[in-house]
Amino acid sequence: MYSWLKIFEKCTRKLEYNCDKTITSIIGDIQDVELVTRACKGVDAVFHLASKIDVSLLPDVKSMYDVNVKGTQNIIKACKEHDVQYLIYCGTLGSFYGYDAVRNGTETSVTFPKKCSHGHYGETKRKALEIVINENGSSLRNGKVLRTIGILPPGMYGELDPTNTISRNRSVRNGIYYRVMGAMEAKLQYSYVGNVAMMFVRAYQSLLNNEKLGGQYYFAVDDSPQQTHIEHRKPYIGETIGISSWFVSHRFVCAVLHFIYVCLLIISPFKKINFQLSPNVINFVNTTFYVTYEKAKMMFGYKPLYDYKESIRRTIDSLPKVQ
Image (cartoon, one colour):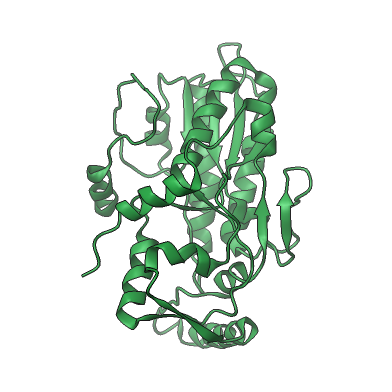
């Protein structure tokens, strides 16, 4: 909790959107039914952004289910108890990541894969999304109904993203970017956090005037170019940093990780050890996947607030200077 509070202290309003609402902070656990219910009292809409992400080699499956699925059920229950009319849910495109390439996908052409490459994280977020969408039109005690929308961003970049600093520092220290997770030549999609935030705003504003937008989900992407993972990281690791010409086969890396996984399971009764790199991550950076925002554009007039050049500038300006 402390780390999040430190992040909040650094935050200033950067989205070009005027809000005259008073902000009251209630810090707690989404699994706490009483607290969630109290937080929803007297509000018109809920933006549900809380989730647990764990794509490690030994993920905490129970915790992800408790937070992502049961936590979402707690919010819906609280909305009904306090007659909250609008619920805007933050899902993830990770629920659609499989092992087959997707190019210019849409909400109608891209379906949930039989096996999600993001493992239990993607699956629990998918379950939560289905719960939210199915609750659209539910009756409230005051005679009105609950309207729900799912907003699904891909991986995001922007201010306060710690992964950019980590990648930059490692690359500067080593002087080269090593491709140890496969060739990483797949075309991936990332969105600027400011554009994703604006989609939430536009979706809510439009839902107020058009109830038909409810019960649906929308891909929250922008005009950032489809890039390889290395191309995406390049602006942050520096133009002078070299990229290795050789790479380790991603199949070989996954095989090694599976071996490590078995070893960790064997010793788990005696000592709990985890490994943050997993086959889920390896497959993600080696499988082409990108979609469009045409549905959001058509249904509620969404368009990115910031272009790619401005998004990159804002992100780079937020990074600490390399010593």
